[in-house]
Length: 264
Image 1: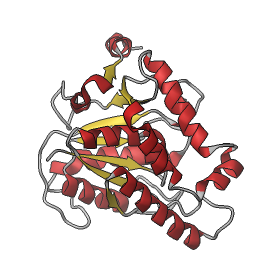
Image 2: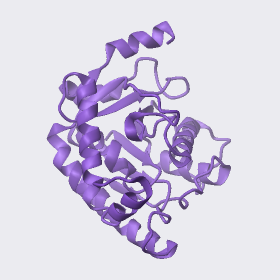
Image 3: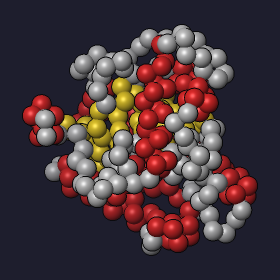
């Protein structure tokens, strides 16, 4: 069976920007996996770090269950996601165990470093899947196979310098929007935290608005998620694009593709 893994920084990142695509891949016959690098322990103004970590672990497990995904335990704490070898070895072990044909992860440019560092770790851990001289923790057998990486749009659909980011392809998520919403609702502890820390008056409305805006960007879909495909070197054949397995729910932006060739 083909496998796909979503790798987010914090509990709820997958639900906000990636879960619709993950659900559709499951419907298309993929075994799906769910991993947050961080425990989310800093995401509260009500509880201490240890309590927040426990609460958010239960919420993330519930969200993964709603999505029908295999759950993987987090690797570190908030603001401690560093591009360093200990975390990289642990993530490489998960990649080698799962053997994903598809890796969904954050944008290389996003509003906070936990997201961008998670992206870097996911890319390197996938690159190292067939390198016997790079030891994972725990040790896992290496293997060479095509693995295609896709980067979701950044939160707010802009990079850290406020520039609007355009997707290279869009996934229509109408059919799974309600399930995606239910998975996000599992993170009940986050509404008050995001009200205080990021002035998001409605956690669920934020996801709704972004899904609708990405749909408008597609020029075709109502609800959508946006993706940019990583360069193939070291990962897969040049034209490998397994999200095409989603058929009519997958739309490539031809203007974006043209812009890649023109270099702007």
